[in-house]
Length: 394
Image (cartoon, rainbow, N blue to C red; front, side):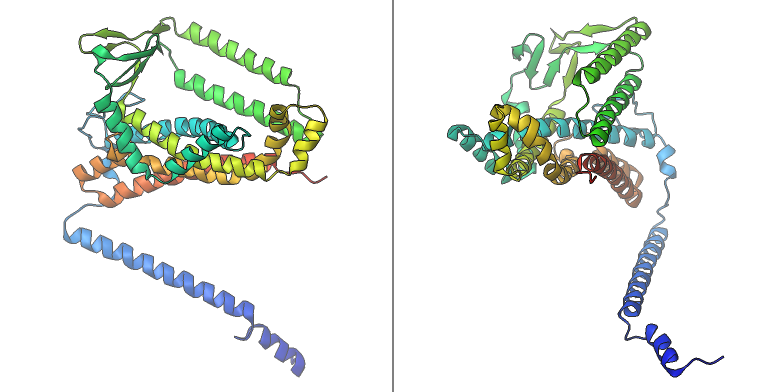
């Protein structure tokens, strides 16, 4: 079977080098091949060098006994536990400071961002000065400053400051009353987060479908009912539940819970530093909403605080959420600086592990995998929320 000359020429032209799409595919395949060869060379060269130095590879060391203590841990840990358990403690410590940091930085940054737009010149100037100072001092120096301030400037436990009854501030950290004797607290906390998410998702879903806000009373009743059930179940399954108030005994406090100087300094540094960037995100988001929205709200008889809460912020969120996600990711990754002040996060514990085992490559891979997983999880949650608040076309 033969083709006419014009059909044969068009057929060959489609697959010739002159076709831009063909050239693009060839370039991409060549790049992938080059990357694959480079990765193969790096892996092969690494394995050959490790074998020449009699260094074993693999993650079998995770089952061996760690043999070192960890200063603070949200779960039970002993030096006789495995390296895997020690690394898990490091991940939980990182998640703890990152979760608290995100919440506090969001609250503080939002207040500062709104304050910068205030008509009060003094308040706006103070907010501006805070943002400029905090953003232009490296975070590592701020961590050193807060750690030195807590450990060297604050008094000993015997002379501890007591700003609120039962709350003590000393060079040992911040000591506060705490709830003890709760069984399954992690389960109830997880259940609370899930239910709270379902309530918020239901509100956003109903708003997206009907265009109206669901009744606040219905949401409030649901949350109160869940809290009552959770509290009753906690009491039922934790007969030894009680509030432990710290008391000075000897040279330290007994009872309650103490936030270590390392944790306190790290949390302060992350929150105060990130809040400056969050403030700018909030400010730019509010300013992205047209001035006519303010005028329309005032024309309806609303106060400025009501206009901000009911009209401006809901519209500004569509601009605020994407860059806010970047700030949450930065805060989480900046927590790796905890190793500089001795807080046992995943980087600190992984460094101790690889120093004892010699498994440097595996240790670095574990750190990378931990931060990658946490960062992708934060991005997924924020992207989900961003899609829910996006404008829906009818």
